Image (cartoon, rainbow, N blue to C red; front, side, top):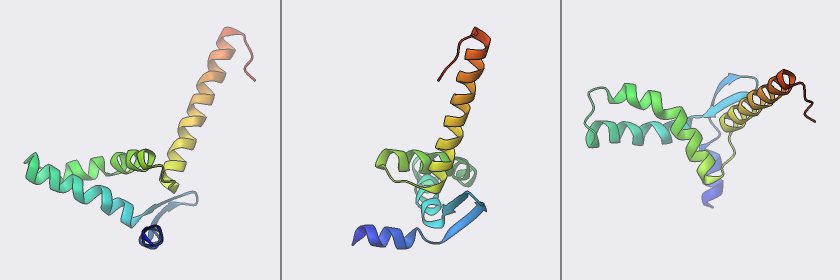
Length: 100
């Protein structure tokens, strides 16, 4: 039941491009607690700015921690892997070795 409810809540999405979309529920789930902590616990002068800045990283790491696949996490992970592969290739070319 809870899983079905979460899946329903995650259906409305903001489409960034053809391979990336972000669930409105996920954004709100990261933004609202960050805003409340920034404003009432940390008593920061710009809680909206802090919340907006931290929403994506908090959402990313929350999904990673709980093992929840999301288009944003998949997109970021794919970019990280591509960067690491490119770095390994560049390093092997500089060393004159071949990585298979």
